[in-house]
Length: 436
Ligand code: S3P
Image (cartoon, rainbow, N blue to C red):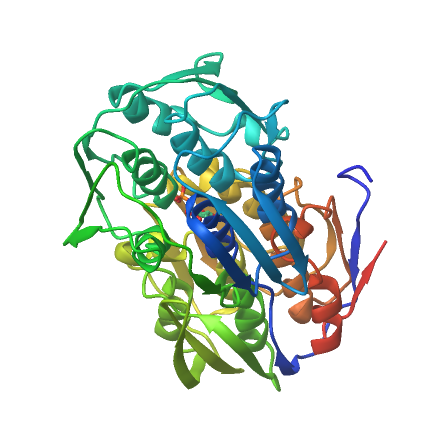
C-alpha cells in the first residue's frame, strides 16, 4: 500500500467514553529491542508496540543476526548476542519513518567492527542528522551523511573514545545515541542536557545492570561494561493516550479511563499542560512496571482556559503539541507556545502542518518561528493534508468531536508507525471515524 492511500472521514460531533488501553510505548519498545539484543541471555518483552517504527528496529536486529521470537500480542523473546555479537547486515537497514531508530542505531553501529548503512523514508531523509554525527565524530566515529546532513548514513568501523558533551538541544534521541556509543568507548563519557528530556535509556540501562550515574542534568557511564538480560513490561504510550485525553477534555459529556499509561516524569508534559488549562485528569491507580511509573488515568470533560505554556514543559510534551493545539483552540482566550522550534524538524514541520490544518477549520492563530498563538475558535470542517505525519492525522481526527462539518484527512497511512488500531479504538470510544 502506498503512503497516500489511507483517508479518514470524520462526521462532526459525539463524545467519548469507556475504558481503553492504547498500544505500547514507542520509545521504550525501541530501546527494549536494542538493549535486549546486546545483552547476555534471553530478554522477554511484553506490551511491545507492534507499530511500523518499532518493527523496523526489530527487523534491523534480525538482519544483524539476532534471533527474536514474536511479536505475538505484544510478546517478544530476544536471544541477546552480547555487546560484540552483532553481525554485518547484508543490505542497508531501513529505518522507515523512525528518527529514534535511526539516531539511536547510529550511535550503536558507529562502535561496531563492521560497516553499516542506515536509510529511511522521504520524511526521515529530510531530518537533521548532524546533531548526532558531530559528537560521534568527536568520539572517533567514521560516518558519512548524504549531502553532509541527511540519511542515508554510512558508517565504517572505528574505535571510539569517551566524550564530555554539552548537548545544544534537549533531545533524548541525541542523548541516547551518545550513551549507546559510550558503552563501547574507551573511558568515561559525560553528557549534559540543557533541559530534562525523556530518560528511558538511562532507566533501561540500569534495568540491564549497566552502571550509569545521573547527577542533575548530567549523565555519565564508562565504556566496556555488559548488559544482563531482563524482562521488560512496556507501558501504554502516553503519546498515544494524549489523543484521548484531549478528546475527553474538549467534549461535553466525555468520561474515559485510559489503562496502564506510562507516567514517567520526563513524559508527562501533556498532563501538566492540560491540568494547567483546567482539565479534569485523575490518576485512579498508580503503580510501577518494568522500571517505569504507570497509572490508570480518568479524564472527564472540563472547560479549558488558554495559558502561556511554561518553557520547562516543552521537551516533556514535545510529541503531544499537535493534539494540544486542538485543545488550545477549544480553550477560553488564547494559548501561547514558544521555545518549540524543535517541532519544525519532526516527522513534518509540525508548527506549519498544524497551522495549515487549523486554517482549514477556521481556527484563528498566529504562527511564530518557535511556536504558535492559538485563539479560541469554533471548528468548521474541510479537507486536511496530514503530510504523512501520524500525529497530525490523529490530532485532526480528535478535532472532529467539536466540528460543525465533516473533516476529511488525507495521507493517514503513517498512523500505523506509532498507533496501529487507532481508528478502531477511536470508533469504539465514540469518535465518528471511517477509514478509506
Ligand atoms: C524520542 C525522543 C523525542 C521524540 C521522539 C521519540 C525518543 O525526539 O520526539 O518521538 O524515543 O528518544 P527528540 O529527542 O529528538 O526530541
